[in-house]
Image 1 (cartoon, rainbow, N blue to C red):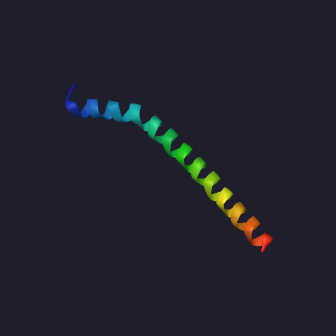
Image 2 (cartoon, rainbow, N blue to C red):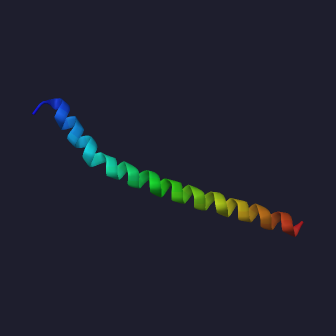
Length: 47
């Protein structure tokens, strides 16, 4: 086994973790963005 095949093996292991990380990041970011928009709307309604 050469170093090239070893690198592909490591990439196959790492890829699912990277995907999970990005999905979690997007969910958190959307939640934060939604909360920010709701807060802005409430503050405008009070004026």
